[in-house]
Image 1 (tube, rainbow, N blue to C red):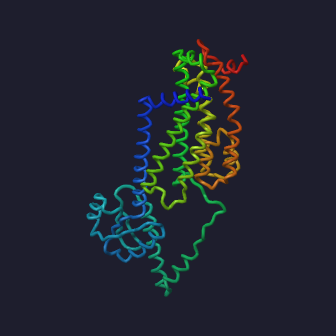
Image 2: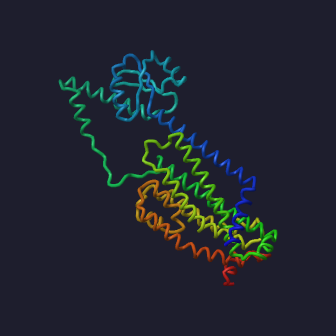
Image 3: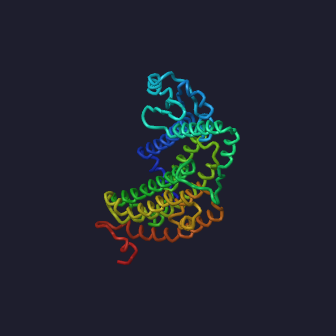
Length: 396
């Protein structure tokens, strides 16, 4: 165990000593923080712009202002009106972005002017207000009370209800899920790549022959995996922490039922499981080649194995997070680290299901570690042409 720990410390020091690694990690943290502030700014700006619209009116249409305000309120839009003298003044105001649209004409024959492209919020509000005004005029002409009729019409709208909460590929839940799984994917790929590069570098320089004079192959392999795992976990902590702090400072998720602390805590769990499952495969397969140029071709199957659950989680979970297929996939070891974070962002996953997913992966890990160690032990001292996986497993 002492020798494994010495290799682990060596790997950690070697990673931290690489200037490119330190710069890339620091740059990623900066990008996460800056990106969080940028996203928050544009989301707030868009919400403010969508929630408030400036509508210019001719003085002849001033009587429509109450109906426009009511129509906007029903649509969740604040319609602010102002009087504009004529079309020429309206065109100047539109060009200067002082108003979003100009309404002219007379009830029954209205004209709505935009600078370029229509605004559906304004179109709907004006249409609703015009129809309400026309209906009120007709009711008054027939001797009725427009207020009584309007109340009756408004109360006739149905109340929406759902058996299950609808999920959609939008909103803060989807954003959180994408960020968490993207961080997980990036950290796993980066850690696996570091292990593969280190294995091939030692093999190509024949340093591994010196190391194996005092270490068993399994000890060297275990130390490399543990060392890079510690570095990878530290990266995840930095990235998730940077995102959490930025989200807290900006108040990005205020008003939403999101437990960001729990999401980040479970992210560490899924990283450890995913790293153990995937990284050992990266390292063992890298031992089959002797040149840096061959790393991509030999580790491509592992990358593909990660991409399948990654995209499955992104495009399957949001539409039905509690569906039968999603629940099954969230228990499958290679899928669980990606599918489960997505599920937990959209729905309240029972703790029993979370723990069972962890247990299934934990049970499978010893088998994969044994297979990876076997491949590494037989491939690390092989030189010349690339060894096949079949040969490494002693079947060829």
